[in-house]
Image (tube, rainbow, N blue to C red):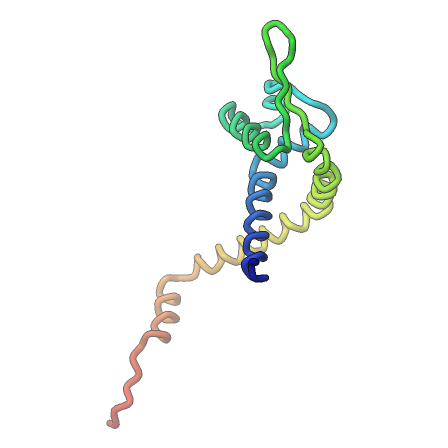
Length: 148
């Protein structure tokens, strides 16, 4: 029987692996585009600005592997494929909508925090080199304990 810490590590590993897939750069956006109805590959690619053909293919395959997205062949000429959410994927609808709303509600606050942080880092980097050097020397100057 696993100890609580091992069970906890295993559980964390499992959660992390799922969140890595769902929460990666494109996973959540693909899922959000499939919330209303299944879509063809080209339709998804047009809706997801900036995603390459290869990255969309990879993302869809990985979401399919996780059981979140299903791939269905369409009886059309030429043959087509549609992607939709599985029941497991559909269970993500509310969390995805909630996270999207949170991002809309707090987006400006987050942008302002980033700007403040980046400005502080830039200001620190622009200090004159001789001031930085003198400051750093106070930490590595040897202390002379000999009597004079």
